[in-house]
Image (tube, rainbow, N blue to C red):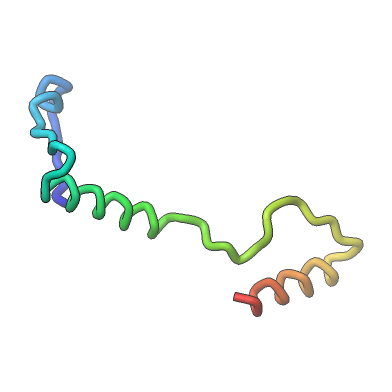
Length: 69
């Protein structure tokens, strides 16, 4: 998907929009989802907050999480 640059908001309003159900729309949508997946957080760590008694205990748990993936 090419990058478009605009000099004003008036130029941005002239962009051709794809109608749902067309091949161009599907291609654009796939491109957006592919781009978003590259920046999505991986599920290496469980959600929430975990408290540890020492730095060593926290590092051991982090290593365990890393080995799990």
